[in-house]
Image (cartoon, rainbow, N blue to C red; front, side, top):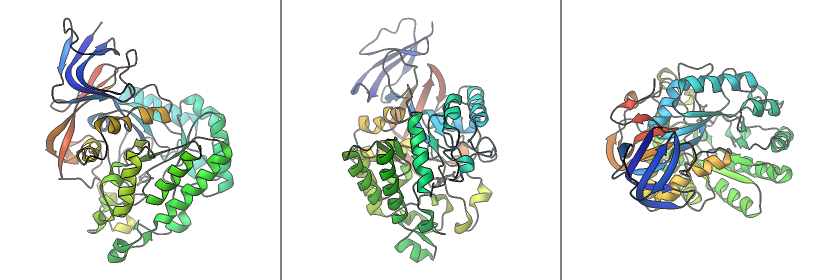
Length: 431
Ligand code: DOR
């Protein structure tokens, strides 16, 4: 049986609370032991000196664009980009073409992932047919096919009666509903955060209130139905406050925040950079700081990239016409490491929000280094300096606001099921 010893790294395993320099032994694709000075006889040794050794990162919110928009990304390229960013497991949203509102699409995604992706891929099915917000999908059949959650992400279910039924039925099949919370009547034509920046740019604004109102409604409906509500890409102080208060009242709610909403503000759009356009938009510094506090105090459970590839020709247009979204796998770690450097989160707490927390939200068995589980492991050099160039990355798309920016911290090595799949020097290691 193949034995791999990851030697001398700083092991961060939030599930057990372990944060110490030690070794990790992998045997037959599973974690066999985590201990100080494990004997190296008969092992392939990976020197992890100076690195963090974490459970494989889990991204619960991604867009892999297959089926239907393979010119932006496909499951193979998205999976490669994911592991290059340290993500061994990703969940992919349903806004593909056709929409993942039918078990045949769920099956297709799982089949492609099995053959093409070095990362594990879990499909999120649509909550309503065609993402139209009108008729529910066949939730039982979709779960049987392998869907791990329901979401119309990219769109808001505006009809509260439909949303109530979606929550009721998802509760019945024991799966969370992930909401894209933006009241479209308030968003209107808005393309940037409503405020000083939208006024200066002369662009239509999207008010923070559009998110806050929608989150308030969905929290009430979660209370009514008892369903697990997961709020995607929280971007406003108001939503953070509502989620915190709802959690205190015992409502079953979890939430995520993206690296970009933690790092950037609407000022990043002042030069009309369409690579800083996303939905929800980048907000004010107060909103960003509230998201950071919410992540630190556990109100926001997870960091999720919302990796949303768009082709160069789609983004290289007027700001109002560009589609929203940015790629995010390969920049996530250096961007969120700033939170550790600024003393907002400890390394262990940051890794918790990128491993065991998203695993629990989606009921996945991954996200820990507990002996016996599949050996999905990420090695991170928190000090490594590099310059991000999406053309050297693995996504088919280039739409990143961090293009050409200096980065500190990099994923250097990744194992999935005990097999090396990525190494910063050698690149992707699987076919
Ligand atoms: O910016 C975004 N892009 N937000 C979404 O919710 C959807 C995503 C996409 O699919 O491009």
